[in-house]
Image (tube, rainbow, N blue to C red; front, side, top):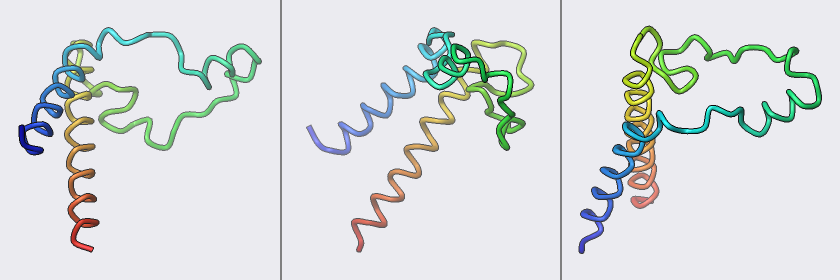
Length: 95
């Protein structure tokens, strides 16, 4: 199997997971948020500078259907990561 085929299969699997299975991810807070809640300083947290961005909180802002919103955000995240990675790898390979 060629490297290109392996990469494309991996990309397809990543898009499937991000679009279909990410909705079922844990709703529990992440590690830092959990500790902040346990220690008692969660109420001092401030919103991120990008909290109003279109993909804030792993969802597409303005979309009522939560499953669709999370799926689209996952797909966009996978595609952006792939584009940046392949661009960086190409740049570094030429050097």
